[in-house]
Image 1 (cartoon, rainbow over the protein chains, first blue to last red):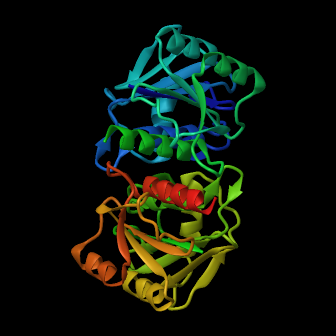
Image 2: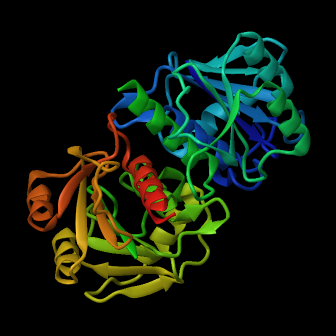
Length: 198
Length: 198
């Protein structure tokens, strides 16, 4: 599996938001919705070997992690409202320490970035942090299809989060000469992996 | 300028659609909204050297072209509703043969793919057709920052359209080993151009 972790600093942690206002009252949930799309969609079908972990840190009940699992996923269309609606349904569940499945392939639990990174680290996974000053992903030869990629949102990554990531990251990678939105970075990561696997 | 042309085979040609149903009643307008995002957004700002031409071919009044001009554009946010709302406002204008500006940087006119391609061709622009069996964009050395890229939507490109494109296209390009949505292809095209320009 490839795993993408996206930190939503303001993303709401209850289902009490309107699908008509994902950028506003839902706390820039639109960013996370686009990341779900980038991680999972192919022209004809879905990337079944991908997990997307949305780390929701907004009010009223942080932190929670919503995971989209490409292997089991159903009912996802490419538009933002579609992923928004599945996130909303997940947030309507009472999140506990262990994952609950809200709809096929969508899971929610009460956890934060630190726990998630610890789990990946303990599982021996290669963790990559995406940042402008990282090594060019095209030049990096050790990338494999079992990698974990950590990305920020419109607010980037806080110093505290960066410390957590630096502790476990194998390498910091960069996708090109110009700084892009996280969902756009994910497309370039996928393209690089697709080419390596081809 | 870089120009992207996206054909929306079912995309509505009146403003009489709901922003809450871009994939459905608006005729997969969500695809075109995501293409606008891919073409124009940077992490901090907008690509000012880009035009996106949406060729709308759906009911009730085809064909119309909505152009987003990065240089003059205002009021665009990255979410689908935002671009959808600007497209809707453009479609509420009475489209004529010449471009009318509906909001800053958004223009509408009554025209179709054939006229648009003819204009680019007469202006001496290099036109590229994106298709799975094309030449790998990474291997193609002649790409310049003044190129025009033509992409289909979820229905691809019809035989008739392909004939029009083949007549004027300099080359058919491919973005990688796996077939992707048009908005994702555009990210990879931009990344390639960014790298060449860097």
